[in-house]
Every structure is written in C-alpha cells, then in structure tokens.
Image (cartoon, rainbow, N blue to C red; front, side, top):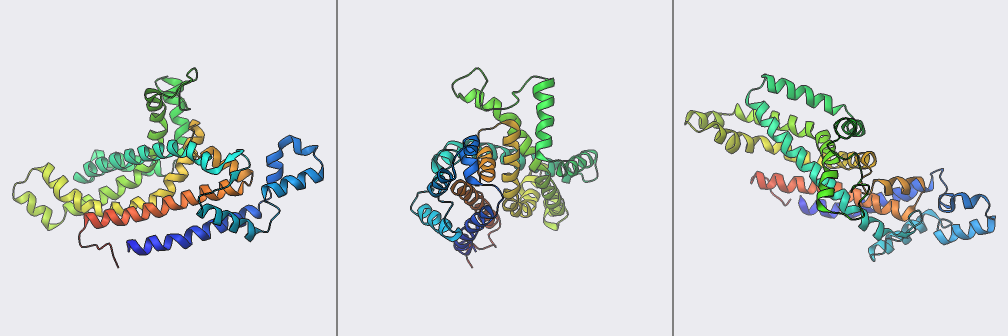
Length: 318
C-alpha cells in the first residue's frame, strides 16, 4: 500500500500542476498588469508585449506548463514575477515559519483532543463529557479566522498579555527565540484549537467503544489500576480510528494555517499564495500548489504508516 501511494503521487502532482496553469490561464487577472502596476497604465503596447514575452505568458498553455515542469525537475522553479526573486528563495524564506506554525498547532490539537477524549470517554454522559462535546460541535462551525480575531481582541487588546501579530516586537530589528515563542502562542493556539474537535470526537468514540470490550473489562476484573486500563488497553485500541484522521486533516490544516497566518501577519507562505493567485504568477502559484499537494499526500502516507505500527495486523505492502 505504501509503495502504491508513493508511485501514485507522481502522476497526481503532474495533473495538479497542469490544472494550476489551466485555471490561471482562464483567470481574468492579467499577470502583466500585476507586474507593471501603475506604470503599466502609461506604458506603450510595445513595452507591454515585450514584458509579456519576458514573463513567458505569451506562450501557449501547454508550452508554459511543460517548460516549468522540466525546469522544476532540474531544480529550477523559475522566477516569481510578483516577488521579483527566484521561487525557491520565496519558499525558502517563508516555508520554515509555516511549518513551525502548522507542526505546533497539530501537536496542540492531537494532545488536547486525545486528553479530553479519554477523560470524556471514561464517564460518557457526565458533566465533562457534555461540556466538551458541546464545545467541540461549536468549534467545528467556527471559522479559524473568526477564532483568530476573537483571540486578538481578548488576549492582545483586552488583557494585553500576548502580541497581536507578527514575528517579533515592533521595535526589534532581530529575531530572537523568546520573541518568536511569544508571537507563536496565539496563532498556534487558535489553529490547534480549531483542529481539536475532530481528534476529541474520534478519541472519545474509539476509547468509549474500547472500554466496553471484553478485554478491557477483563483487565479491570484482574484489578489493574484505572490509569493502566485507560492508557495501556483502551487508549491503544481507541487510537486506531484516530490515526486515519491524521491524513484527512492535513488539507484543513493547510487551509486554516493560511487564514491564521493572514490574521496574525505571520510571515509564512499565506501572503505569497494570495499574491501569486491574484497576480497569476504561474511559477510561484504552481510551486506552492505542488507543495500543498505533497503535504496532503505525505499526510495520508503518514496515516498509513502510523496505523500499521499501531496494529501489526495491517501490512505496509500489498
């Protein structure tokens, strides 16, 4: 299964990149106007045509896609027209901050959702269970950007305990660990909390079903401690359904990260993605889309690997 997924990723990435170029070509936005800005209003048609040729947007769709694809396979992602720099440099400067935010938020969601799910499953129908389920269903319907604005209003404006956005303090010219950590708290917490409901509900259901199994009842009858029963038996069995959730949550995590980065002015790839889309920046747009698609495919592959490690009856081949 793992090998098939890896092989399947190659044609998927090729189709996705072609789709990006096709959609961008059908877009009403003119990349030349986005590149020239106000200067394009007074430029001659000859100059505009020359810029169009320099950007390569005067070529047929298939030619543009093929030139970019063959260059990408050689390690050359092209130059970003809107950023006025190589695409590899644009991604290199921003990707690390996006990964830091996404990984931190994902860890928050998994740990918080798992802990609450186990506690709620232990006494289903109790006060904690009812409150946690109500909060989870409410958060499912709350957009990440709305949670971000609410967090800024409360923690930054009302309490003044955390910065409202950015990567460092306004008066600082250097990036330090302390500043990054403080500025990371709100966006990572908002993104993590927005992803928590699914992990909570899956864990609650899985652990609750496991507690009703004969093996767990037998462990309790043998006098094992409740913590051992929960963590050593029920949690392990109940975690299997949640592992399949990891891959499916990656697209939502990426979308949420883009919204949260925008709200908190986090210097990740969100701003580059928006500018690439509105300016029809073919090389940058294609590279960012491939990056997001690869993250989704890796998420599904990771889900399969974790499931296989947790349940030896599941093979990695086949």
